[in-house]
Image 1 (cartoon, rainbow, N blue to C red):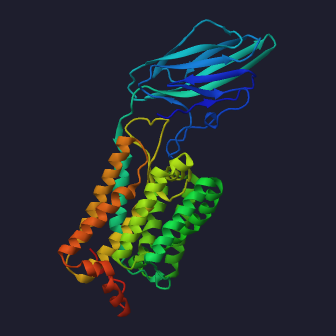
Image 2: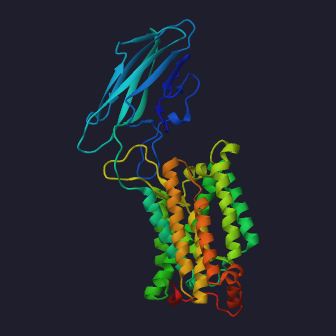
Image 3: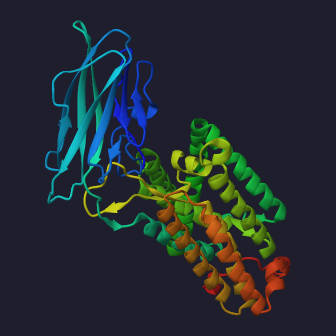
Length: 465
């Protein structure tokens, strides 16, 4: 369970305020206030959960403890609790005596009890404000307030966000693998990045270095990546839109101008609003172009790339907490706010909870398996013996992602998606290629090298699935 609380700074010396759960959590003292207790407005629709404390639905009361650390002076506490939405709940607090006197080196407990109401609007939570005045003597007092949320019942989901992410990921795999084999005239002068064993190793090492730098220097990383993503997004969206417009109305200057205007408009909307839907559109289009640019020279390279990515994912999700105190992958994924991932908030029938958290799926969990699946599709297009391995790999991707999402729901912990995806994509394809007596061709990729030498490298759209 996550505990977040908002607190307005107290300057009173010798005074400490705790909230008690399985242990006491310090809210503030005379020297500092925890960073989690700073003011933050509720921003539900853009996957930024409120940092404020939310008392969940199974909690019937909240216990606050005031410590007087003065050696000689008595302090007096006056408390005024308020509920913003009285249609949702009532609160009671003890002790009710006003004021409450706390002797030197002593403490006093204040318990807030909740009485939830049934409401037709299905609003499941309300903001609670606890206003306190601390008297240290007749001439010295301090006002402060605590804001937190109380949830009365679990809000019913209309569509689980993981279902949306599953649909997005599988759709992008299918569209991207087919689109990646089409000719794009604007990319004729751009050399595709063909992965081999060496570049696969360098790619994973570079990804690890980048991830570590983003973890250690998130602010600088956010700025640098924002600039890179800005131009990459504009270029990717413009190329894809211009390509599609040319197919419909032919090549002319107006098409290029319109494609740039649309591209700038989409990217501007993202960086201005940071809405999760626009994030997913930008991420989708960037990844779609990557499917076209990135190639694999053989299934041997594909196996090496996914195997390295398999251990990369496991290390940075599960093993990194033993070295850095937290999951580096999860920390970076949730802190870097850029279209490098698909995100989706809970889609509610009624009003959403202040503790709004988006489900996240990194683009690497789509792109890396996707370029391997594209290789399989390309191979089957050339040998012209059906698409059994391609369909098998798509089904394997679906199953692997579903298992990953089930693990996420069960364990409530970030999961390395490639842990589930890599085996269930590679192994069935290998088995099927052996059965069809095509393993050697698939593994070595010789058929592509001979086709490339003959000048037949790109496939026409009519040959697609």
